[in-house]
Image (cartoon, rainbow, N blue to C red; front, side, top):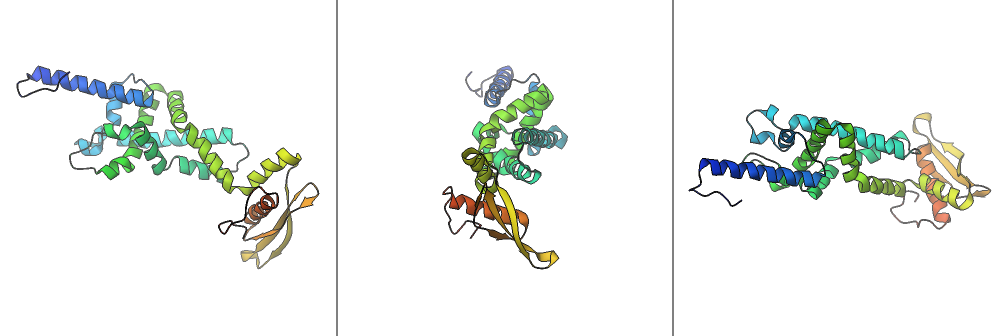
Length: 255
């Protein structure tokens, strides 16, 4: 449909606006891979508070809900998939995945921010590609959750986060020397590394610990740490270096 002109009737202008809105909604559905039953809900998800007089008509409440749904899905996925990770490990991965930076990057990849309705002169391009882009992803998640239920929202989140979850896990493993050593040891030696406390120094409130790794009948260079967990990571790193899996550099924590 061509753009309306100054000679167009009010009815022609109305039809143009309706069709334009429908086209935009179709584009959003294509970008998200989800078809909405309630189109009004989708419209609300892309309405920033600066574009309306009443903030209750904006997407702020949806953003609040979407943030919670995203956290639940990511936490459940990490809990079910990474069964050998402790709470601290899971928290680090989850924090990166649900960060504003990650949400904004996904929103830009899907092109969601370009559909956000904002007040004139209110928002800069930087904001649209940053905090507002992150927020609109959360509002879309909430809209899908309300429109189609938890399973629909979960499917959408896992579809857009799948590769990022795998990447975050891989990056985490690269800094988790104990995990790397255990995997290598089980694959190559069919054995699990054991960590042996050799020494400890200092007062109770400020101790440091020396540990070494043993795999079967082989012992590897020991390492000191300000706590046992740190010493274990450094000792695991020493073992990985000794086995030729990693190279020692100035940035490595074992030095």
